[in-house]
Length: 187
Image (cartoon, rainbow, N blue to C red; front, side):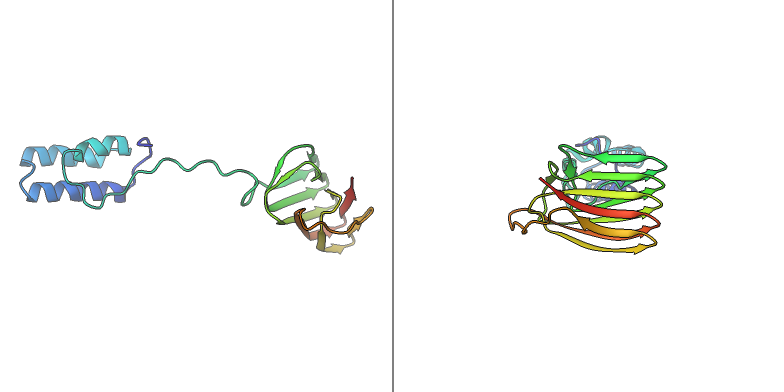
């Protein structure tokens, strides 16, 4: 927590505390000069905090613990990109509510049947240029296809069952240029 690196602004705020303490007579000139030099050479909060530990701190920044890692199921995740190659996501994996799948002379295959999908509304932006993006959804998932095919195809196939309101929905948008983006429902 105190290993966090301090910014120039942080060092300025610590220097202001020292200046106030010197002006109030809490520090001698030698103590003030010594601590001030240490403030401007400090790299982390761990180096700054002892310099004012015995002084009133005023409105210094509170050092908070590092934020926990954001699970892959929230926010954006790294795009799934296949260039002259293949990318597969099958089995148990966490899907973000905002995903990108790009296939250029390659293929991306996403199987959502066992994926952990936290949000009820999700979007996959799919781009297939002389390639393919295949998305397999579980029975009951509502899929909205909103892509454009230019000498290519955006399609939904298989048995399309009635949407289940308890199952997350997915929107597939993007572009198929001399390629294909397909969504199929399977048990």
